[in-house]
Image 1 (tube, rainbow, N blue to C red):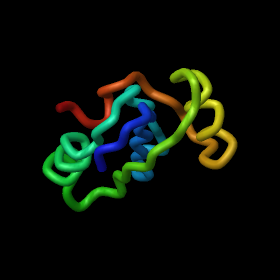
Image 2 (image 1 turned 180 degrees about the vertical axis):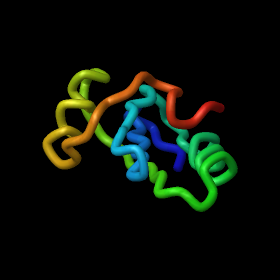
Image 3 (image 1 turned 90 degrees about the vertical axis):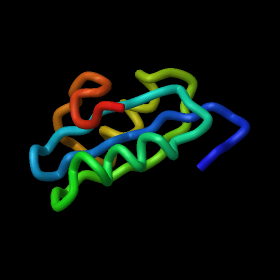
Image 4 (image 1 turned 120 degrees about the vertical axis):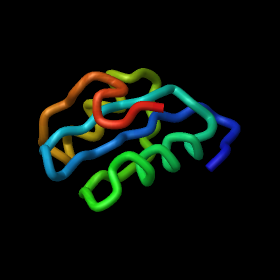
Length: 78
């Protein structure tokens, strides 16, 4: 989805119990296509998160998804 305000993309890998925070960005379409192409058949999903920094986005996500955070690009590469 293309947006005016920057946001962060959270990519979760439920098979490995990890998540990464990508961004900030205004268009997540390339990432969504990469998730589908690279992780077919796995429990990998994308979600968006607001916040002023990557740290804010990660902290907000950890409150709902208490798993291990990995480096950006570790789950899915563009």
